[in-house]
Length: 335
Image (cartoon, rainbow, N blue to C red; front, side, top):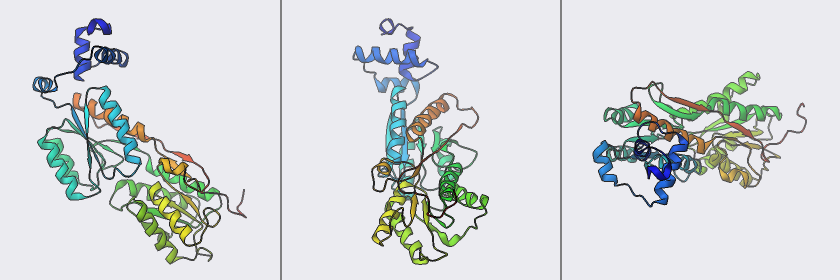
C-alpha cells in the first residue's frame, strides 16, 4: 500500500490509525490506495494495540430539526476521512435520555463526545472528562472550561433585529428558545442590545418563550397575538424567532388569524435550514455555517485526543443575513 500511495510505511500507519501528523494530500493518497486494494482494517486488533475504539459519539437534542443533520454531515465526513466512526445519539431534549446515553457511552469507552446539550449540566461533561473522554460542545456554551464550536449568536441576533429596524419596524416581537440554554440567552441579548442601540425601548411583553420546535413557535405567536392587537399603536409589526422552525410556526399562526406575511407582520428566522428558501413566503433568516460547524467540531475533538493538555479550543464562526420575502420595508418608513 505504501508503494501504491507513494509514501512511507510509517505514513500509511499514521494515516490509517489517525495518529500523528499526516498532510491532507498524503492522507488522501493512502485512503485512495486502501480503497483500490480493497483494504479493510482489523478494528479489534487496532483497538487492542492503541487502547482506542476509534468511535466518536454525536449527542444531539433533536434530529428532526434540519439544523442538526447538517451539522452531523460535517462531523461524519471529517471523522470518516480520519479513520473514526460516528455514533449518533438523539436525546429528544429529554434530560433522563441524555443522562442514559452518557452512561452508555462511558461503558462503551468512546474516544470522544461531540455534544449539543439539552440540559446545561457541567457535572455531566466533567464525568466524561474524568473518564478520559474528549468532549467538544457544538452550538451550546457552558463556560470557559470546555472546547466549543459555535457561531456568534449575539452578532447574528443583532443582524436580524437591525434588519427589521432598518425596514422601519420599532415594535418587534421576539420568540426565544429555552431560557436555560446559553444559545437562547445570547440571541435574546443580541435582540435586546440592537433595540437599545437604536434608542428603541425594550418591552418584555413582546417576548414569548419557545423550545426551538415548530409547535412552540405557533404557540408563542398565539400568546403574542393575545397580548396585542397588531393594528393598535402598541402592537407589533415584526417578529424575530430564534430559529427557523419556530418562525415557520409563527407564520402559520399569523396566517390562521388572517394576517398576511409580510404585508401585516414581517417574520425573521435564524439558522437558514432548507425549508426557509422554499416555503411561501420565503423566510428571511440568519444563516449559520452548519456543515462547517460539524466539520470543525470533529477536527477539534480529534486534535484534543492527540493533544489532551492543549489549552481550551474555541472556534466562533460568523453568521450571515439572508433577506427573502418575509421581511419588507414598512410603508412610510424613512429611507
